Image 1 (spheres, rainbow, N blue to C red):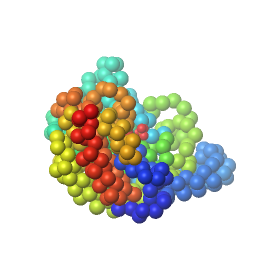
Image 2 (image 1 turned 180 degrees about the vertical axis):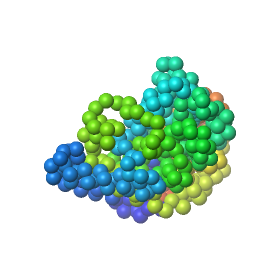
Image 3 (image 1 turned 135 degrees about the vertical axis):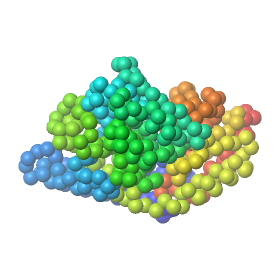
Length: 389
Ligand code: PLP
């Protein structure tokens, strides 16, 4: 695990434990340095022709090269955005606009709210959206996706690679290769992948992939979209001619340089200790907290646990743990605060009541085993207490 230094404990108030890394990760020290460096000397408009502009543009060139070399792609295949929300809009709406006569899009019930809502918008305009179900492990079935994807009718396929809610990792490699053979564009929501499982876009030959910097230790408000060369895609949003005419808006040079630095560090980090740490934590919870269940299974992100406790509302448990100094999540951050059950958990076959009992624990580098020990002790204490209250 990461060193326990002031930096590694990422500015938490004394006594606090942060176990909500799938919502966002703290800024990496290297990313902070890169941010300050580009902010100090690369602050000019990267589209300006003068010397200052060229200095700023050089940071973007280097960032694009880093994205390419870490993912087995070409620098020209990367477009920098304001985050995954924008990347996802750009990928789906840009591809749909480029293939207007193939009005079927195949997706899954495991998608993040952004993908769900962009596709619901297209559905309202007459597109046919086919949503394949999830297994009890939380993964979509490669076979079902392929059975629903016909070259004559299918405009694109949009799938989540690794679930932000359960950590389920689906079989993207097989699907990407087969869809490429069928010449059907594939968009992957890869937001939860970098720094957790291998992220190679030559091994997984998707057409589009969306990323958000803050999930792997860059600042908020910066992301990236991979658009494979010759992909069917037209620009979806009007504006200036930045990003080779593929995205308008003055470039966030410092954020992009910081994000590339974070990506380079994240993809080579040794995370081999995470899987056993998570498995050990889960088995101790199941053994020591009566009426506890693991949600999902199979191949998962190494640092994500979804857990369910009979008779205990996740929001009450979350608030109680927060009072005791521990930050976890009840499902995805984007849906927390709302009372609707998570559609992803319902898609796996949980009842609405069970979905409301599910919490998510997600960790990262800088988490130390005693953080999880303390959470376990709190769960042993608080779950029965909440049942009794
Ligand atoms: N996709 C997934 C799987 C996510 O976890 C998130 C963030 O929670 C997003 C997309 C949206 O990312 P952002 O809010 O950074 O735009």
